[in-house]
Image 1 (cartoon, rainbow, N blue to C red):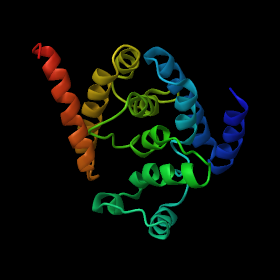
Image 2 (cartoon, rainbow, N blue to C red; image 1 turned 180 degrees about the horizontal axis):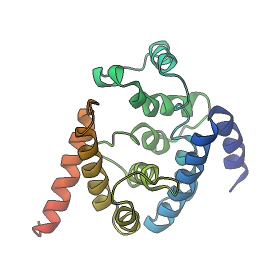
Image 3 (cartoon, rainbow, N blue to C red; image 1 turned 30 degrees about the vertical axis):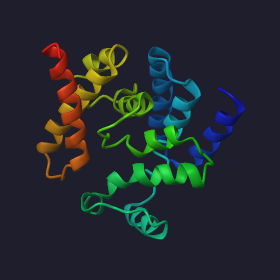
Image 4 (cartoon, rainbow, N blue to C red; image 1 turned 45 degrees about the horizontal axis):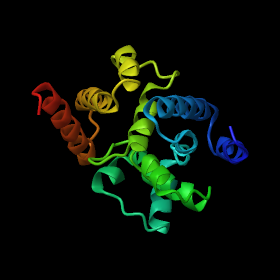
Length: 197
């Protein structure tokens, strides 16, 4: 880990509670491993991993007021479910508070919760690392998803999104339309492969 990453690590640790910091470390190292497997810049993956939840421990009311203060536009589904806001706010703070200027890293932080219809390999790596990091135990089909992550990012995205939507439909939480759109993109990709398209 280079000096910049070590300094960033110290700053981020102060902004998180113990449990969130453990999760963040898991995501950071999982992202590094996935970056190695898929030919993505390892430092970028570790930076995005360290910062992906940098806004997570901010209380929901404060998240809402910060978005207003920084003029970050929120969708209705985000206002109703403020836990979704941390990705968008996190990308903003990564730039303004932690000095990250690389658009690819900011994008990966911004879409790590809902996904996005067009995602770079780094975007996918952070989304997947957040789901499969070693401390995660409650997600369905985890062993299969973890194996898939190192073989095929697109199929892994499809599997995670499918399982996530199934889970969310069983709760009373509203589903962000972007997650549904993202699922459709990866469903089409996987269906296309099945039919030799």
